[in-house]
Amino acid sequence: MNSKSISTRYKNGVYKYLKALMNFGTKWYDINFVKVYNKMTNFTNQNERKKEMLFYTLDEFQRFLSIETNLKFRCAFQTLFYCGLRNGELRGLTWNDIDFNRSTLTVNKNIVKVPDPKIGKPYTVTSPKTSSSYRTIPIPNFLLKDLSDLYNDDANYYGFRESWYVFGNIDPLSATTLLDRKTKNAFMARVKDIRIHDFRHSCASLLIDSGANITLVAKYLGHTKIDETLNTYSHMYQNRLDTIVNIIELQNSRLNNNVIETKPTILLDHKTTLPELEEESYDYKEYEIVKPKDKDDLVL
Image 1: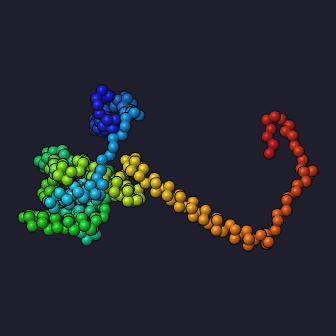
Image 2 (image 1 turned 180 degrees about the horizontal axis):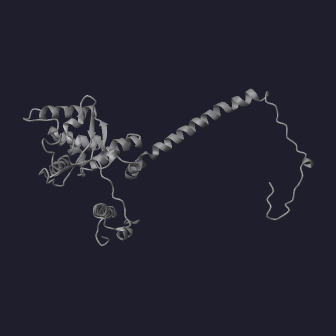
């Protein structure tokens, strides 16, 4: 693996899947992989530069979206950008996951590109990535209106049910169809072509740059721990360091102004009323000097 030109993260990802296979073998077939496990230490490379994270700014996204005329795809890209869903979470949304009364959507399943022989489908419906990925989040009003229009369009189809996929119908939208549409729009809008997952990064960037609380951002994105959010998006906070300095400058300025305004007044008001402090005197004869009997003795 070290001889291949692949990233450290990719190498450790391969290890993760290998360990999952071994865990399965240990659990169901009692195979002992202890010796192998001990040798599988994570790859590290201190000299490797972290790849720059790609994302759309709000302006870039608006340019990207202006090209899209199909309502279903418009809703799909808006849900990715404004709700921060993963690719599989987006494609796994069904109409009964959208609560139009409460203006929320619920993430409770995931679509992976693995054929399911049981139902004869080219995809598999699984649980979300982690337990924290199960979440219910609010939908912006403008997106809710578009989803409502999309729902009314889909409801006209013969045999429509609430269990139909929002971005699809009986079956979810294929990953390649969404990918091709995204690439075409980016080219037509003359903006950079980012990955589908980078729409999720774009959502995080929008929230962080707008001053959203990091704990709420983690909950909104469905991260297990806040550390995951901080480690992934900490570089985005570099742009907000000037804000921290401005806060410090403002507080220091207020403090200096208060000192300048109040100190002379206090001295004038109390100069004649405050008595002079008498210097305390000590009679050292009252104290006995004790010498340690032994060098190891400590006398306090």
